[in-house]
Image 1 (cartoon, rainbow, N blue to C red):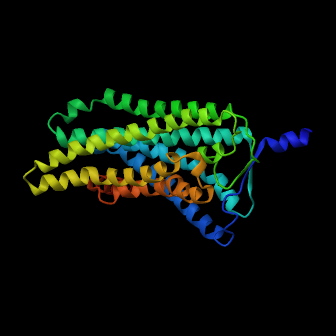
Image 2 (image 1 turned 45 degrees about the vertical axis):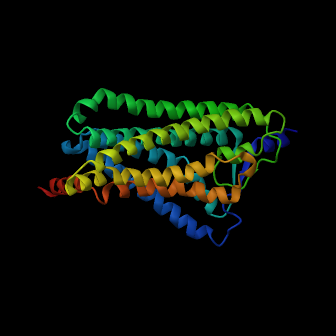
Length: 311
C-alpha cells in the first residue's frame, strides 16, 4: 500500500521522449538558450548598475525583467535538460506544485512588468518634458513591486485551487513542465468545471488586463507619433518602443495560446513546443532584442570594456 501511495504521489513527465531523434538537438538548443539567458541578462543588469547614464526608469524596469527571465527559465531548464538526456522525469507531487508555483509567479510577474514598461514608454514619448517628474524613483519602485506581488498573488491563487482538487487520471503528462493546462486535464470530473472557471478567470485577469494596458499605451504612442512633423521624432519613438513591442509580441503570443484556451481542447503534445518557446527561447532573445539596436547599451558596454582595459 505504501508503494502504491508513493507512486500515486509522483508525476511522470514524458518530455520529448516521443521524439528521440530530436532530443540531442533540443538539448543543445536549450543549453545554448539557457547560457545566453544567464550571460545576456547578467551583462544587462551589470551595465545598468555600473553606468550612471543608464540610471533611468527604462533600464530600472529592464533590470527587473532580466531578473524575472533568469528565474523563469531556471525553474524550467535544469529538469528539462535532465529529461533530454534520454530518461523520463519523475517528480513528487510537492516538487511538481513547487515548479508550477514558481513558473506561474515569474511568468505572471513578466506579464505585469511588460505592461508597466509600456506605460513608461508611453510617458516618455507622449510627455517628454514632464517624463522625469512623472517617472519618479518612488513610483518606479512601487510599480516594480506591484509586478512581483501580482505574479505571486496569481500563482498562489491558482496553485491553491489546483492543489485542492483531487486528481483521478494517471499522473502522466505529455509535457516537460508541470504546467497548469496539462495538470488540469488530470483533475477529477466532479466539481472540475467550477474550479476551471475560477482559474480561467484568474488567467484572463493576469493576461488580458496587462494586454489592455499595453494596447492603450501604444494607442497613445501612435497618436503622439502621428502628430510629430520631424523624421527624427519618428525614429526616436521607434527606437524607444520597437524593442519592447517585439518582446511583448513574442511573450504574449505564446502565453495567450497556452493559457486562454479551454482545458478540454488543450493538446499537450503541441502545447509543450509552444511552452518551450516562451519559457526557454524568449528569455534568451530578450537581451538581444533590447541591446542590438540600443546605442546607450552599446556605449555603456564600450565604456566598461575600456575601463577594464586600463592599467
